[in-house]
Length: 351
Image (cartoon, rainbow, N blue to C red):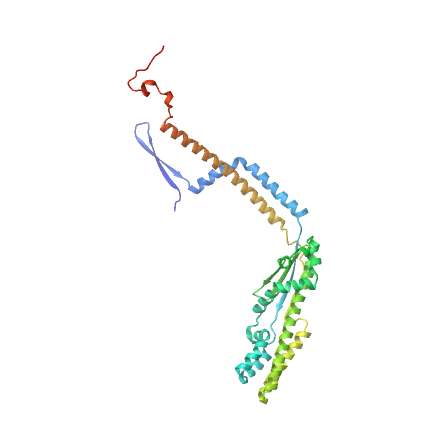
């Protein structure tokens, strides 16, 4: 499809006939671009010089003045507790216990039994871990436990005493980030700091605190379940039902001891905290390219805007001149001849 337009122009031939000349017009977008280029072209050297200076200034600033930050990373793989024993015990228990007993037991086992009944896959466990790691309570306990006010905040010239607890939480939490990989089920943790060693140490703090919190939750939940089962055994006269309750109690004791003694409880550290050998920010190439682009864009916009304003002023002036020519100049009353101001009186000539 031809996007060019044609224009037919009539002209007179030397022999007196009328001829037609067909002119092919370029697309409107091409015309507009050529107009812009004609405006910008005389200033091309200035634009290039300013862009070069902007790029050079950003490179020098990022290299010698700006604060460099490094990002540490670690990878963990959340693991759900084994559900085979719990499934067998819960199945036997569900068949012999009444609804009230089941509710009383599962109420105390909500944080333990639900993952064991088939909902504790890696994705769900990772989401729970991310929620814990980013929570206010977890972060503030981390600050108090490892004295991060002096190690992180005061080191960067800020006074923790003048900061509210929420400001301290935001200061620490905005440097921490997570990323869950749906392919391999791994959870990657990140922490950014000026010092590579501090960033690596902070991730170690996060991993240790998360493991301790999950372990304490497991032990507390198992202890609550054991107490509830002991009370139910003492009130149940059926020996068969008592045996099922003892099986479930044995499983909870096993879970409690496993949480207390297992080193890699709740998750495994696939990749310990480490810091790559490159800076995380500033990224000199990206910022230099952005500075050059902004310099070119702003200068082009300035010259095009100035050209547009000059055309607008010229257009307004032309309209004013045309309006004055059409309406004619206003004639003052005292400048009119006497015979026009006073009809019937002839013009006086004193010469």
